[in-house]
Image 1 (cartoon, rainbow, N blue to C red):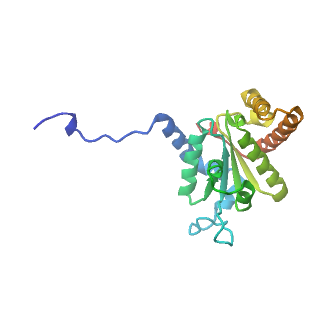
Image 2: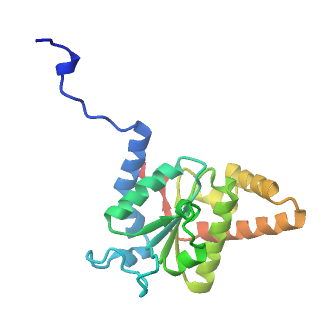
Image 3: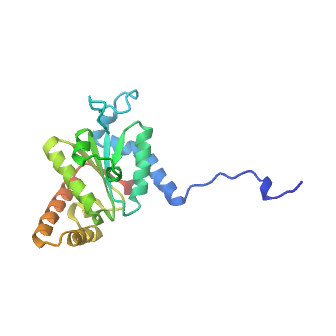
Length: 212
């Protein structure tokens, strides 16, 4: 009988450290994310109704939460675990990644059947013009329809988002210059983005750095 590694009990595979940290961060703070905000009352419905805000039309796709985030940094790992945690809590969610994957759903249509949007601000958030445009549209929908919005600050200072300072602000300027060649149009878009960012970052939200 041979004695060697083959006879050793199989070791349980460990998750990559970075991924494990993101999952632990979400798991340890899910209650804080919602209990610290007025939005928590939205998720206090009966567990027997996975999507308590469903439209009266069964043919319409509905979600409880829409998540806006940048695909350009590791906030997407955080969002993945957030999405999983929401699913465990029987909260239907939709991300802007899904929005761009041929779902044939317009953002406004999604917002009509969604009661809260989560904006995940990160270091590279302003590198994406699509994220900025969606965020601006969400904030406009909040103004016109009373839509609830919750900012989450992941690896970025809330004051940098509010005042567009540091790398966050520099990336915003660079994105506008890259995306809009016409100076007047670029300046108008910058003003719109900055106004929406200031409003969003001034809302009651959640700073992930407080839970590390």
